[in-house]
Image 1 (tube, rainbow, N blue to C red):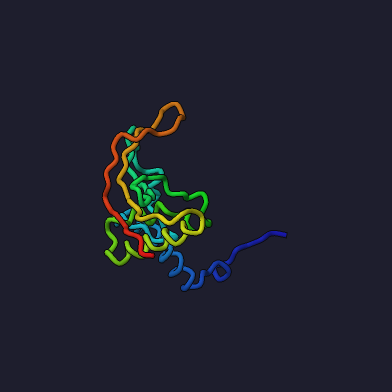
Image 2 (image 1 turned 90 degrees about the vertical axis):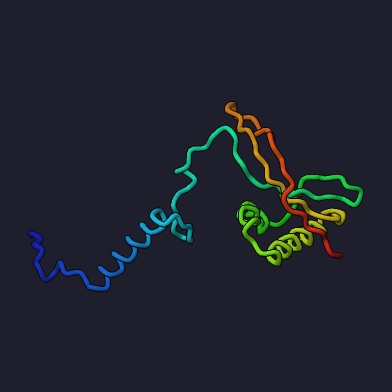
Length: 150
């Protein structure tokens, strides 16, 4: 038995073509416009050359006596593990958005530790180890302070 494709059997519905073209355009737009909109990506993770020094953000707790300690991310619920996305946007946030983020972090940390007096957001540059060891901080600059309201 031979299968023969006829011209009539190989027709594609016009909406299928429209969907296929729209999907192709949607996949091409992020890299061409340098935008990131879920679920489309420019694959930045793999497309940037990373040097030996990398910049990032760090959040610390400051007690009433002025001592700083690392923010206890590992003690918080999973919802707080996407901190890099929030910290990366911190400079472009409005004052209200920053205050809301700080209030959320402060209320979450109150359940695991004594109440901090304030939170501090630092811009940090780290030298990445080529041997697999931990990165070493080479520059740390205090950028934002959030005073906690009881």
